[in-house]
Image (cartoon, rainbow, N blue to C red; front, side, top):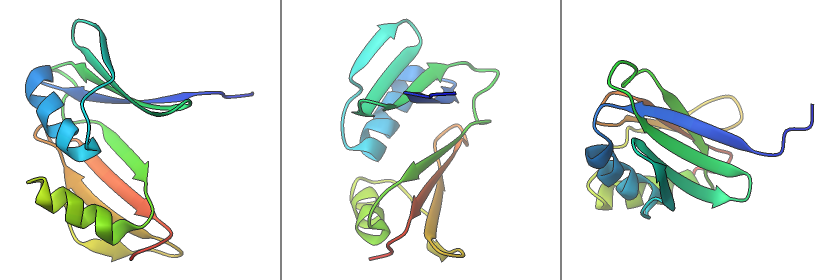
Length: 114
């Protein structure tokens, strides 16, 4: 298998309300809304997040984002009005968890804390 691109999928109950929250999370507006009920953010040629309006599945998604370093990202999120959890130490990396308005889990993972 030669995977070229991975799209992360997050389900939400209200697309417009969730777009506002994810704009704060990502620090930018979605790149496109290619069809009703869908917003997309692109970070690299092969990394995208898709936000789908699906009331039945809202709150069941997990999105893991790799960032370097973690502490400044936590500060940026707090300044944007979001509520990230504490930075936690794992085996060889650091994580931070938070939930979006629907309860979807967003995990940040980093090899660098500060």
